[in-house]
Image (tube, rainbow, N blue to C red; front, side, top):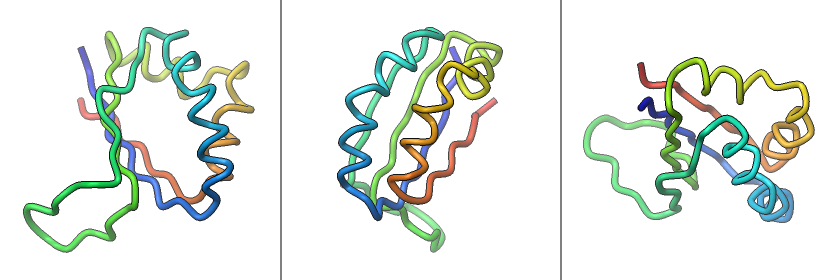
Length: 93
């Protein structure tokens, strides 16, 4: 199991709502899922540019995560997420 941290600064809530409708199926295509996603979090240390939504994603392995990120059939899904605002996704491992 490998995890990814997603930080989103949402500027277009309607696009985020549309993304949520398709994100689960897009992740599942590569064995991924959202472990948790929330606008309610606490910075424990440092002073990061805090997003307004944080999510923890899981995948069976690194190759599955990379396949999800680079799947040409999911380009519209990724574009929808990006249209919701700034998003950074870090693969942990």
